[in-house]
Amino acid sequence: MSVTESTPRPSAARKDRYTISEVAALTGLTAHTLRWYERIGLMPHVDRSHTGQRRFTERDLTWLDFVGKLRLTGMPVADMVRYAELVREGEHTHGERRALLEATRRDVLTRIDELRSTLAVLDLKIDHYGTICGGTPS
Image (cartoon, rainbow, N blue to C red; front, side):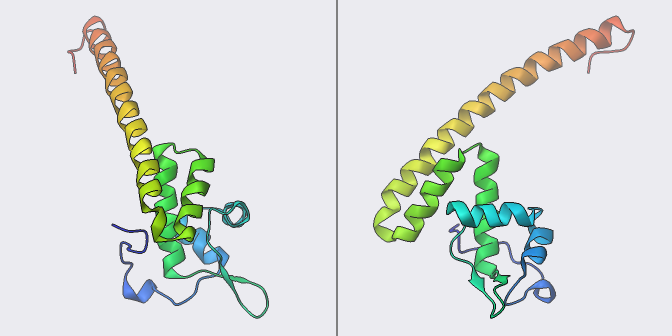
């Protein structure tokens, strides 16, 4: 799935443009975070109304959803900004973008292995306390 594809919202909830407060409500991000994303270059150029208010599009919401996924991977903000720069630079950066995502994927797989190992230890301890507390192991 590309960053321009999104999980469609119900058509009644879709609009051409969204205010920063609407985007905050839809994404769970604060207006401060959205402004910071724009300032550091993580957010592409956001259109403005004639009064200077930010006007986000469906494409912006899709991008923010993708950025949220990158955040969940633990990708450093500097790498997310670099990825955003590569997207803006165009198609000739596909290889570098892929390499960045592949490195992040490796990091995620390592963390998953660490979490599985940690979960196994927790399960042993829980079973132990279940046994000594008169219950049964889980």
